[in-house]
Image (tube, rainbow, N blue to C red; front, side, top):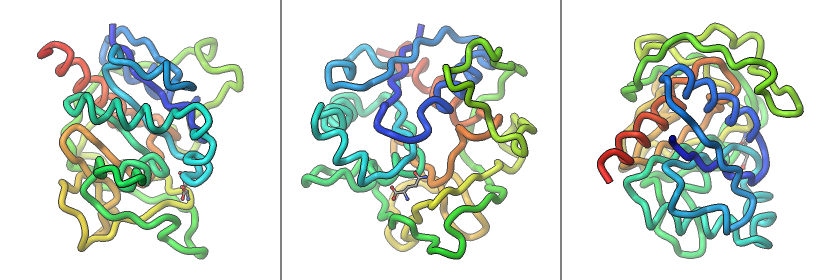
Length: 231
Ligand code: GLN
């Protein structure tokens, strides 16, 4: 049984939970999602972690009370071999954790880097990250969260192989600074790097949890399983 921590910071958390359940089904893995609301929820039993999107400033402020963000960063420092997926604001937090902490992604990132005109858009992303393929698996509506969140309808074509473009949903997305990336680019929007991998830390400026293509969530689970087996 894999335990995946989902940082309940703010933003698209329920969608990540559903994507995780879907990915676990596709890989035939048993999954326990741990909703991390307080520092005490972030413990060494977690095999992987997701930092969702939202508003990074709000996340920093809101999490101060329960020291949640600090405990997530401490966990990441304590377990460098355990995989972490940060999407959008989550990637911002990983690249600039603040408080003189060493960044978890060796990459500079600018908040709202696409400007007003293109604050939100959808476009196909080329993925070079190796992700495991999985069997078709539909999350039963009864398993959905109480808000019955669903993936975006226009993104409902699930793609399962890395050869296919990924439906990139960019929502007031941050932007990596191309000249200041010293980790591995794994997702491209044309010439633009929109996803990076630094060790076991994957940072994406778009929102894979809003699509039915769960390859990044499958990556997280398969890496977590591998690490757990090796520990
Ligand atoms: N613009 C947000 C920020 O700066 C990120 C947006 C998102 O996560 N969708 O934190």
